[in-house]
Amino acid sequence: MEDFSAVYRECYPRVLAYAACHAGPRLAEDITSETFTIAWRKSGQMPSNALPWLLGIARNLVRAAHRQTTTYELTDFPADDDFAVIELRAALSSLSEADQEVLTLIAWHGLAAAEAAQVLGCTTATFFVRLHRARRRLQAALWTPKFDSARESWKTS
Image (cartoon, rainbow, N blue to C red; front, top):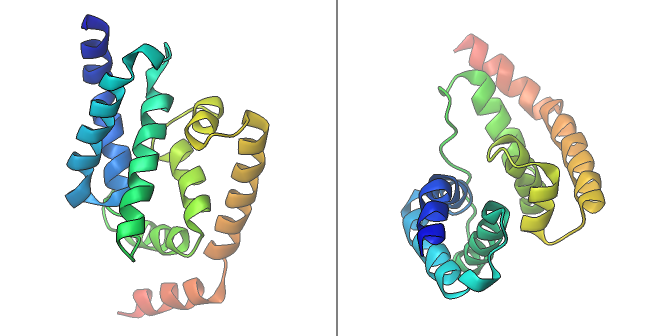
């Protein structure tokens, strides 16, 4: 029980941030609560490094929530809405949901590759391949003409 309380205190903010990033602020609290409810029921299966395991549970709950809705919204970056953030957000939103998740697990949630691989249910080598490809696609999206024209229109307004 004390171990679960410690895991809860340590991991709650990061699970909540993951849920908010991937499901939006309205569903984040519910998904986080359900994540820890499931973790409590399966506490005997909890590994010593609980965060990737908890994020895997949250990921499944986010996916279930997405099946019930038709939109995907990436929200609330922790930076001012200056042009670079707007441009990055637009480029990231143009990627597939899978690419977005690979990139945000590393950059936003600060997981190590092995932890992110555990969240996604793949090997670390497979995760590195997915990460490399997602970074290439993000770089290509950032250099597409539509973002260049957005940059020019922003400068003139």
